[in-house]
Image (tube, rainbow, N blue to C red; front, side, top):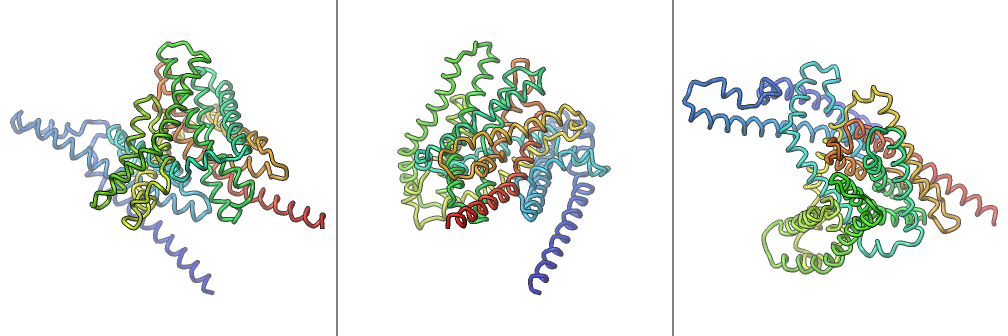
Length: 494
């Protein structure tokens, strides 16, 4: 009875929440947008000032600058309101459906980003106007990129150098095969579906498929109480190496594309040099970071102000991300390394002074990371799926993503271990695939067009959504099957 009453209250709360969200959108779009936005979407905000030339020319210039600044700030604030609202509503609904919040953020981003295709009338037009304004998009892109740096820093924090070194041979081989197979299959998918694109684009598609996002798998294993299984330990061990290798592959592919654009010949020696540079950065960042980070945090512990630990951590994260960028690598490579080298011993001098770093970092991440995922969803162009070739590319990428990670299950060396469980656990791409695809969208080929074109990016998002949604139910079924098999073998032996 109590459970039924709680269910009714929860349903009523969701109903009122949806009604509130609808009224909020209606008010903001129909009322607030009309005053916040310029009357002509594509026009410069300064035109309203220029139109009223009743004052002297000296005053006009000041009015233009002030109006431009005010209009931009209002549009950015409104865009952030819409994005954060979409992120929280989407994340909440999908978590209630047993799916990760990131999928809700992505899909609701796709909805508000393609509002002009929906029967919303002036609401859809206003949404399109504010969210796709070039100046607003520039600001949102910067926020999203900082969010990615924070996200990869958090991923690094979840692992340690000790864990990376101590992975068993099965985890290492699973990680290696889980990189080589998807990159190869992704390249061939590009050869089949993107025949007009250069081979560097096909190679980058392979890099998109390389890294695994095992956060979803880890949550399923934790919810089922299966984290102590040998299969779970192999998956989580392989994930640490998989992250490092995926970022090295990204760095290598970026270097190959840059060299190709510069007209430099590509040879095995030059490719080896690019990979060596990425490895050198990782090894150097880890060796120096283990020493420097402890001293850096010890010196900072003498400061007595508020928020010192969070500030010092952001300086450390952004500093290594900047160094990686200067070396020609993606900033996320530096951010991951910055998190990887921070261990419990680093924070000995901070015990009892401030809360744990993860708790301090959470508000920053809760603001910036959803902006990235909603922004990625907004970049998906749903109208391109009217083209069968784009649907074919999405299907090809999804098949390659699934098959590529099944190959890695052959790296399991122990007998009696469920290879299917390991292969399924490595399937989801999640945020890592999106991050790599977004980097490709900002790069250019030698011909001058994006490495990851809008249609290709849209197909990539579909692949990410499918691989992320299919993993939890398939993994649960495989684990139950493995459990039944173990129970039957025990009975037969007794």
